View 1 (cartoon, helix red, strand yellow):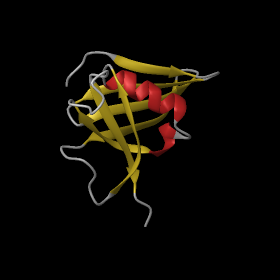
View 2 (cartoon, rainbow, N blue to C red; view 1 turned 90 degrees about the horizontal axis):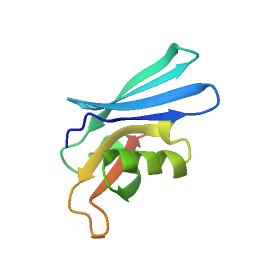
View 3 (cartoon, helix red, strand yellow; view 1 turned 180 degrees about the vertical axis):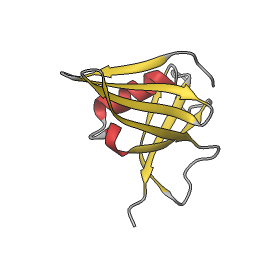
View 4 (cartoon, rainbow, N blue to C red; view 1 turned 120 degrees about the vertical axis):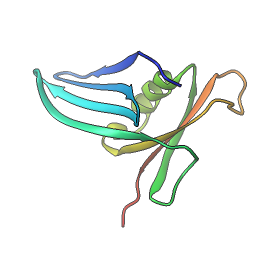
Length: 107
């Protein structure tokens, strides 16, 4: 599922952007033109691995729609997310894709 699109989430003074790359998504946080954080969010080949804990699942039109929904409705989503799994055959046929998001397990 490669897309040339990206998602920018703009808050009062900060921009968080997500862009697909070979490993998954590259997330960047910027404030007033300065890079605050850059982090790789890993695309998983299979659902949940032992090192990750499920945050939640979003259903939508594409990866970026699901990412938008997760960010909008998930508490501290941007701070937590570390990986995701894309299911192109969702249970609910009204949607084209289902994306499950994961965070690192706390040890």
